[in-house]
Image (cartoon, rainbow, N blue to C red; front, side, top):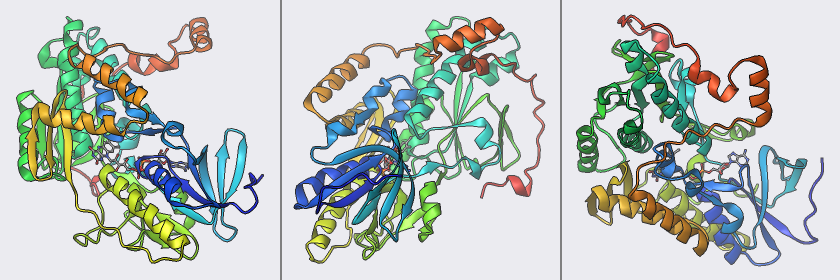
Amino acid sequence: MQTPGSNAGERNVVIIGGGFAGTTLARRLERLLPAPWRVVLISQESYTTFNPMLAEVVGASVFPEHVIAPIRQMIARTRFVMARVTDIDRRRRLVVAETLAGVREIHYEHLVFAFGSRANLSIVPGMAEHALPLKLIGDAMFIRNRVLQRVARIELESDPVVRRRLGHFVVVGGGFSGVEVAGELADFLAGARRYYPRVAADELAVTILQDGERLLPELPECLGRSAARSMGRRGIRIRLGARASLVDADGVMLASGERIDSATVICTIGTRANPVVERLALATQRGRIVTAADMAVDAAGGLWALGDCALVPNAAGGQASPPTAQFAVAQATQLADNLASFVAGRPTRPFRHVSRGMMATTGHMKGVAQIFGLRLWGLPAWLLWRAYYLMRMPTFGRKLRIWVEWSWSMFFSADITHLRFTRSSEADEAAAAGTAPAAVADAIAPLRPPARMAVVAPTAASQTP
Ligand SMILES: Cc1cc2nc3c(=O)[nH]c(=O)nc-3n(C[C@H](O)[C@H](O)[C@H](O)COP(=O)(O)OP(=O)(O)OC[C@H]3O[C@@H](n4cnc5c(N)ncnc54)[C@H](O)[C@@H]3O)c2cc1C
């Protein structure tokens, strides 16, 4: 193992995680920290993913590269290291990271945890094996390909029960991501169907399962209801008070004992702590690192946390901050000020942020928003949403390119290309063996014969915690 040498006298503030929180923090620290302080940003991908736009990748409204921003274009003086942090030696103040060149140790004076959270598929039995999470750009592209595979396959099936199961997409979770993905998916299927003449409109359906009384509990009630109306008009089935208790290859079992037949279940609920947190034995609540009011985890030991991985109290209201992009960015701004104050020997301030509003898309060119007390529905809300994320893209050139492509795609049907990532060697191997390449195998695997729709009482083990 090797410690990449800092220049003599340099002191590192190391940030782990290049998401909304980490990149905003690095940019601001660049301006606030005097020499000899240096900012080092470590992230396992070379880009920031705009998670709120992942649903639009699923619905093929945007290309995958439109929802990511290269970290190196977002920072100026920060040193970026593409690596996965595997451990932290608190005694020696070292971060252990797997880089492209092997394992490296990076020394820190201050270390900031900004590594977000992971999908947790273990909260419902069978979900890990049979449901598709939506957390990473790879998840979004996988779901999109899976949807196209399912629709293409319906054309080749003759059993009406199997056809309906293939055409039924169930989204578990009625929060931001569940609503966004269900809305995009329904619009995508409606637009794509004309290219699949042997698939009838009523063979395609999207159901959203929400274990609560309404959709979008994060937003004011009237916006949640407006989202539900807009989705209902487009045929999306909204099941409120529906708790998934078991997922299998044929669909979902609800806690009520009802079965819902579906070949594709998308999971948007459940998060778990990053494995690094588990190894550090820090105080956590529901997988989030508990911080002091100024985001310190152990100020004397140089540890701080923010964003989705942290449970940060909000002095405006006294509640814990919600895990949203807006709060991650606000915390980053405040933490940069606090770190600059701390190293200068000045007092730090508690985190305080009054939400400026919230937005969610409910389908292609449709959304709901509440900004500075103003409520918006439909296209205006959706345009505001797009404008916000466009503003956050780095460099004028990138903004312009994406703006042109987004505007263009508003007027044309979604792309139905099913991109397979099969390499020549795999295709050759499969051809020689007379089998399908791995990327296709799942799509053509035989589906089980129509299941009897037995009503099975949920067992104690299958209750969602
Ligand atoms: C599908 C979806 C839809 C959403 N919709 C909305 C929405 O509409 N509105 C809203 O406000 N919020 C939404 N959110 C939540 C929002 O995206 C998060 O609150 C926000 O991204 C949190 O920022 P973060 O920087 O804390 O974490 P992230 O953005 O998750 O970034 C964490 C970074 O850490 C890196 N990382 C993780 N582990 C390691 C490691 N061991 N070593 C190095 N790097 C590591 C990751 O690669 C990633 O770059 C949504 C989230 C999802 C998944």
